Structures are given as structure tokens and as C-alpha cells.
Image (cartoon, rainbow, N blue to C red):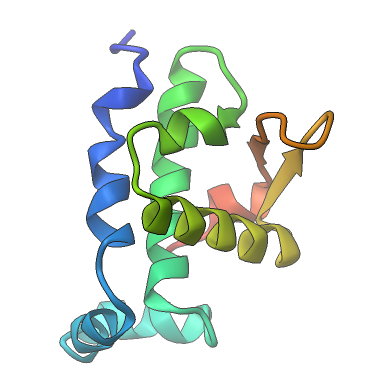
Length: 125
């Protein structure tokens, strides 16, 4: 069993949350044919939404190795700037709306628990 520490892959989260939308467009313009095919499968998705989806897919797989089935949004956002946190929260709402994740919050201002839907885990981003 590998290390069961979320902070080992949290760095990846900051990397794409700090990229501005115009930079993401430039990255998308440089995609090869295989990446372009994946893009059309998720038509209408921003580059950031696809990046967050791929990140969460990886995070859920690593958590599953440790016997856990959910992620804490508070833990994902520890040490992040307000800008990064708001972007991640927004993308969480987008993925919930598209039924790729399930979110739970017991009370206002409590931590948000994120659980994967089969659709997320079977997708190729």
C-alpha cells in the first residue's frame, strides 16, 4: 500500500488553479490530436474544469488505495489563496451540476465532503 497522504499530490492542484483563463486557451491551442479528441468528448468544458476533473479522478484513486471514498474540500484547499479556493469551489459546483461528483455539507459553513460518481471515474479527460 502506498503512502496515504493527500498533501503528496495537492501541489498539482495549485498549478492549474493559478493559471489565468487566457493562458488556458493558449495551452488548449497547442493540443495534439489525441487531446483534441478528448476535448470534443467533453465539449463545452473549460480547460480548468477538465484539469480539476482529472485531478479529482487521481485524488479519488489514491484515496481508494487507502480505503477512503471521499475527499474534504477543506483539506484540498489548505494553504491555498482566496483566488485558488474560489476557483476550486466553482469547479466543484460545475462538476456537481454535471453529475460527476456528489457533495455533502451537514451545516452551513461546515466542511464540504466530495464523493466521486461513476461518471467521473470512467471518463477520460
